[in-house]
Length: 164
Image (cartoon, rainbow, N blue to C red):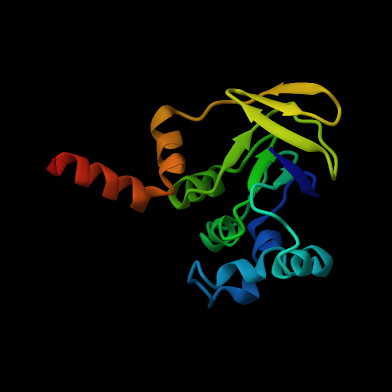
């Protein structure tokens, strides 16, 4: 369970999530400081550690559109937030899976800043409004990669299991 700490609309590009001027920074330990850098207020809340892990960023359609920059997913993964959107752009979705960023596709989501959300199976419950929304499930293999913490962790686990 967590609160919606940021609410954004349609067509949020990777340049909004992780501005291009920071592209020289690629280490996952360094990218989080630049998440939503052009929104000074939200970026400051992140960097001042005012946003608890498990919080939600709620978006409408086409979240993560634009370039294929992996840093857009890694900077959010660094804050351990969950992205819940009506639709997530294909390349951003795959980068998120590979990095283990928790993403939920919820076509009918209705949530405002401060709303408390809870995931229960394939349902997202807005505890504040009392409404429930169906989550579009990812294929099992993709969800397993997210659950493992990303593709590297998933592969390592599978390799170790094969050695047993």
